[in-house]
Image (cartoon, rainbow, N blue to C red; front, side):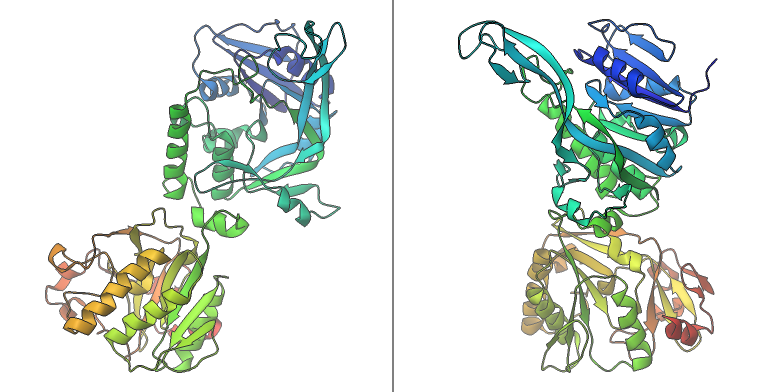
Length: 530
């Protein structure tokens, strides 16, 4: 009995080129590679010929493309799985070339070529038509058209890089080719096309790479990409080998083999968007925002940091906070009451106070050009993971609850769930709307605690708009430093609150904080080491 290293999985239904695809795989494989074909609801036509390295799994009733793929993987005991479409051709030795470069946390894609499978040729005048639906007659002489198999890649139509837009629509990313280096074998790609990808069988199941919750079909490349990158893996295109894919987009007898409605495709996109953009996938080691930051795809909204200060903070705190903010690698707009050399600086001729704070934030928001804004204080040590977050909705304020309050004098560190404007992120236009009304309200009525500092968190009778606020947790916490000159009162123990612990949900203390280490008695060293 042969022990295989790679199982090539082919889900198939109404696939007129399946036999050619299987024969091409058998012809060009050079390693211990088997082919497992899942016939989903009908037998292959033309039929597949028997081969010792070919296994056929037949379901008399269709169970869907993802499901039949998973059932085929169930039959494999190989280290690697490569899922391919049933209308593809392959480079000689594609299997050994890919396995040579594989690592256990990789998902790998061969270089993709548009595949020229056949032409229609007139039996009478020899007029040729590039592959497409069966023509009724020759457009030149009205003669009969016959299919002639070509079966070769279109070498001028190469793809290595892929992405998806905020609506989770697949896109090619040809501009990334400019970043290629001549000696690169593997290149990182943001997303995948979905017609061919390889990973270990263990990772296939661990990541649930064909999640049937998406439905039968749709979002395969997006699912593969997000699960690979967010789990801590790497999605790569291999420049040293290739496959060709026949794109059947013209309908008729040259269209998709499953009866897929627009509603089903839309459902798959909604499922995918909710799972990844809302950071609901439980296997993720990174946030979705981390992935967007890594690749910076052109259609996605851009982020910026809005830093505000009253210029009264000691440099021993202010400078380390600024240095830490630079690690986010985002545009910074600073709004101060005195000129300063940090980010793009805006100076307001105002005195320190609550109204001035709101005016500072509003002035910064109006100057910012980016779409998404993080409002940051001059005395918070922000975790870089705070800036990985990608707000999923444009009409919601989002607050990071993963923050500890730290007393500088002794390193007393506490956490309780609290809405804090210095942990706020949202879309710029929404924030401008809120802070415009906030400034107008205070100018008219004066400051009152019922207004509060945090957009979207007021009681119904005190609201200045109807927008809501939601909570998220960054990967590692930030430190809100309490030093005696804070604009708002320091509240660190239950006795500081009128209702004691009832005002401090999930209250806890710690001497050590993840990402920062020992806090108690150690804050000067932490600031010096930033």
